[in-house]
Image (cartoon, rainbow, N blue to C red; front, side, top):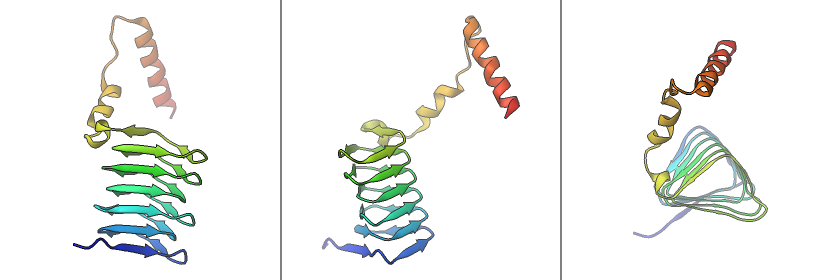
Length: 144
């Protein structure tokens, strides 16, 4: 099988989900989910609003959404990411902007179910600060 790179140039704008095989370079605007078992390069002129779920991603442009990759995520020096990252490995160059959380390594490839368990554990009835915190949470929930 030959490795092929597909390119979406800077004058391309897509509203909707994008699926591809192999490798893709995006230099245009995408609004929607991007999924692939290949590698994605987000070019300097690219603007992506939506989730990215690929094998690997290299970001030179702007991404507003979460990135989930099974292998490597690279944020280059001019990259801007507003969203969370789940990746096997993560590289962030000096000058890159990243606002979000990151989960890197084996934990990123596992199910995120363990992360959602901790807020579900009930507070211990013996500690007064726990019940006080619980009361605050109830007041916040009632106010919201």
